[in-house]
Image 1 (cartoon, helix red, strand yellow):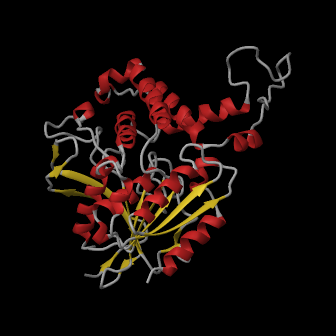
Image 2: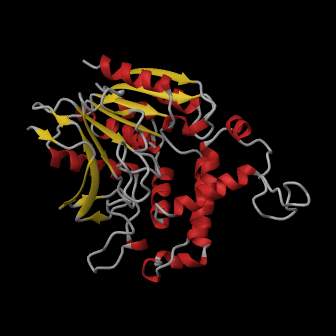
Length: 376
């Protein structure tokens, strides 16, 4: 099958389903929003699936329709770039539970009202099942590569474990095979901030015309701290104060305004996030990440998830990432080796912490480019 697409062509389709979920619930029909880049070869052998992180979306290399900002991985995806759209057919889908066109709490239930908290709890593996349904719709039987960072890396691992015969290679960046107690704790702080906002209304805020913006902003602020490194924060902000030339005390207000530059930065991150993301989606997706435990899905042994796998793996970590530190990546590599899977691993140096994979990183670009070109 030959499939040709305009660069950055955005689509939403409805899949009849039914989709059995890990929770025991069944979802049908299922909407999935996605974008494609490049052209699919006649033999379908050049397809790459990009899996996005928690707050990202399908607009990996095209302008975001709400914010007007460029795609979130423009330095990696495009003509002549590491994921070269002149060579590969690239698919990126908005995950199940999100708010950019795929089925989630903000989408309409059969009764015409938003699902809200009636939407079933989902898992990373449920997200992957929906992506597999999308690829079936597109006529893609096998992926040359599935790639993702952070939650996208979780999906890439789940793809390799759930559909090993469909995945020739997987690139897992700044990710983990399960959430630690610390990861869960940070997510719970964010969820509680949202649910404590009086405007959350038990998740039924859609009809009110108002949203739990204060709670969602705080959740984003708390999470954003985990995406950065202490060295990066110190270099960028230190203890520098906001410029307040009219203040009799210099730059200090001696109050609770955003006196420090880092405070102003975090508040901006929180406020801007509210404009592009749904609070209930944040609850559902963070819960899916917390439930993710690939070893538990395979009898408590991570190596069993990759036993006899023919998939080739590339695992990448960053030395200042304390959210998913290098030790997490090394444990994945050990499990891959124990399972007999082919795996390469690299730790990259960056001052930017977990978010390094989203920033311009020539070293990461070289790793991705070299790995993709080495796949027979």
